[in-house]
Image 1 (tube, rainbow, N blue to C red):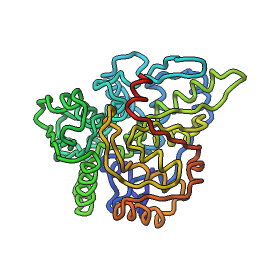
Image 2 (cartoon, one colour):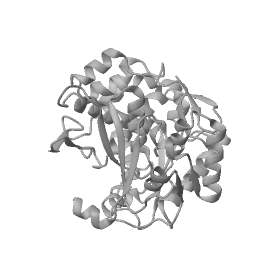
Image 3 (spheres, one colour):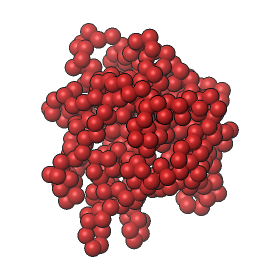
Image 4 (spheres, rainbow, N blue to C red):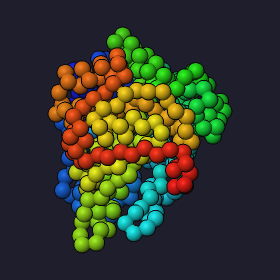
Length: 380
């Protein structure tokens, strides 16, 4: 299995991609060839015959190639799901006729990002064991957080041997609960760094560090959704849920629409990945807060980085969503030169533009809305 940078097309293997982050040219990784689910796997998922662990064993291995054998990956699944409190891992609740809530708060930090980072922590340990053996040097892990990623990453990697992890967060701009989840961990391999500014400032610094280390050939892993492993593991709940709900539709099997809260566009891109695999997803509706970069992008084809507004949902207080780069690359038919030019303009001018019709091309239609704090409280 090979992956390519969105900005140059340069290829990398599974271990380099999952134990790294950015490509050396600053791009993000996407599969060189996109695996699709075989008919038998689709049938099993559609019939609801798989639990969460079984779904993970079906959906993830095609993207790992021969990096791990079947038994080793089964151990990754077991370890990666061991700390979830609900036996169904990600249960569905029916809110009304045709409207369901996917409960993604049953992990150790109560964040949906546990669903990506708990198994990624187990997978990283397994890949390092296969690749380097017991004599491997320490793996440096870096991340930037607006709340969710930091606490979930530390829960996944704190105390692991051979790992050192440092998380950047904006001072005073994350929830108090998540701040305490991060800063009260006493593991010797953990460092929390609070910076003046916004999450976008933290993420910008992180990307500079990752790009510099990559150019120098130094091994550094990112735990943000720029890491493909995050996207891959999060796609499991989207795909499994879509198959389950499609089979419940009156009149036969029908594709479903997903409503996804989104700040950095990673969770939404995980749904796009699920659709590329063959999951029956008919469309995405992105829900953002007052920081409406995604709403502007998918309504007009243009977004500009502005001041970050503080809201009651600080984990989505983001103006420069990293995973829009993956969207631009896919919708632009994999044109690496075009992607590189658009991302260079975003870095230099704070502006990202793409043809508005691209929102219908990736391979499912995307809409996005922005709501303020009053609307958020009313919905709660």
